[in-house]
Length: 461
Image (cartoon, rainbow, N blue to C red; front, side):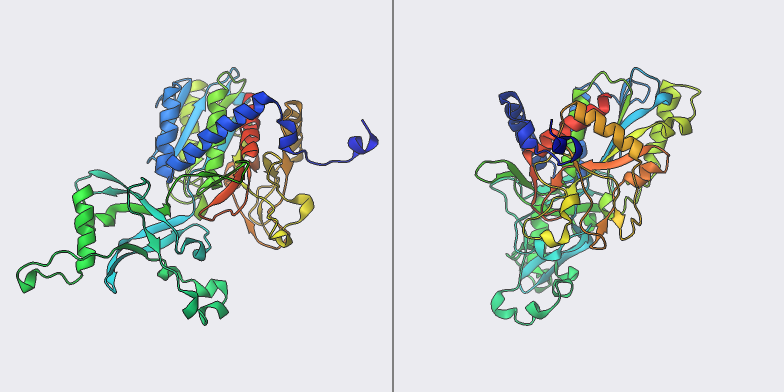
């Protein structure tokens, strides 16, 4: 080995690592499964349905006394645990990801009629660039709960024969004034209104039977015929507008996966695959999939809630009676599984190349996140990073490290700091993604493959 190879460091392309027929075949199979997962799981509730089916098939049960245990909270977040050979008090390996994504939520009173069109008002969820959502195909997903407690699942726009929805955009011929505005001013949140219909309800014979808003009424009639719901039922509903259609392979070589929701459902997929593959761990395995990360991890299903702590308390009582919860938590090791911003060839000016995530180089670690002077960050400890370097290098897994863009250029946060409060070691890691928070994010299939291998290595060490 040359002095250059010994002393200098350059991350290695995952494409140079996984060249065998065995790896390439396994990579393609995993990519196909991942595309199917993204296509099926458009909301956090659908992600939970997918996870539940997979882990129950693998023998997990809703009993924290069991060696393979699960616990779901409002079908938006879940806790999965597998017993290790060593006691909990000696430590555990935790993977934590989030299942929610930026989207458009329907308001509680969304429906109105204007210029002979039925429309639905929305309130955006998470960090979006509003213009991304104009003039594109949307599907509606959601849960409606009636006064009697009946729960109705709504899904319109995913099947080929179904109608889709959209938000209009201003034609360039009349946009002379709009194009002079700042982007933050040009696209108003209150104008993200979804077209729901156009044909009127048939009028009654009497004048008093004629609807004030016949197009809106026709839309409500159709929803009632299909789902048995009324306008008032939307007061107790969660309805989401998301990009319609399946995930797709991108590029002539099909090496890139394009889809809505890869932040952070790529991490959910990789973590779940790793958990299901590593069935005889040395240390206990914990996998957490949270909700509400995109809006600060708030609420009963976010990482700020005590759901994780309550589950661990019950787990300790069942698996190691008498052990102190604080000691168990302090001895834990965690990967906050979240995506990184891949360096974009058309926007290189916001990245610092030496410390930028790159597609095709395996999972990317972020020692810290936050903004400006690392405000709001968990800053991982070097001894933990050193251990991770060793186990991944020994396993031949390609990986690299990054920061989120240039200093003072912006910033972001993850669930890492909410795990770090317990004293455990935590670092952020995930696949690099292009067009993050857009309706069509891009990831590399070799990174998905490498990230799953990395998560497996972490769970079994």
